Length: 283
Image (cartoon, rainbow, N blue to C red; front, side):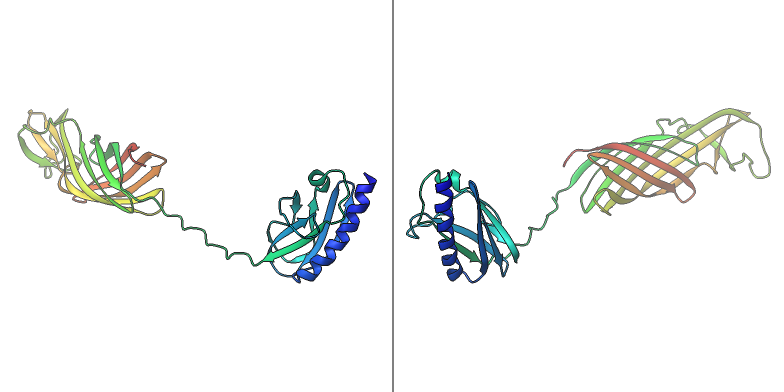
């Protein structure tokens, strides 16, 4: 092993002189051999793609297949004391190698290509929710919403109280929210009749990847009738409204789960909050 070490180190010095003459970008080249490993240290003037070629036949043929690691075979920033480690014994084994030569080759690195822009997947997302609502009319309602959204979108909502007792009953008068008819407070039975329906269409606009704004318009009816002692019914105008439904709210896209929160008013007379829970069916 000692013979191998001395001969290899001598040939390294010859090879280093040759390398200095051929590559001005690489300077101050030194070599240290420690048993089976050879360490080559150099200074690099400019940022370069550095390769180290090794010849064992006095420069007739060079190869870059030797087992080298460190500041080599990649883009190296400029600086001093850049090191390359060559596993010489693994490549050559025992023997005399007086004709070993080294050659540094540096090239300007290829311009860094900008990372491709991340394109957001487009395409309308279809969703459906089951809704519940309650408001100032005191009538709970259930229903559903279906729609699609991306940057913009649309939805359709249908709601009902599932109780149409009010319809078909003759209403003889109207009372205030507190039960007064004019200045008179009549006697009432505890019986009441209610009906409520709401149909709405609207639009959706993306605020970010999770939150979407939504607004809609349609027709709504909230009707509450109280029964008089005599058995007839009067409409309570304080809890009833017929006409234009307007809504505004948010849609939250929570990893395929959809949550909607809306405030709805009928003729700006009765108000209700509406909650929807459902799924997005497309990615």
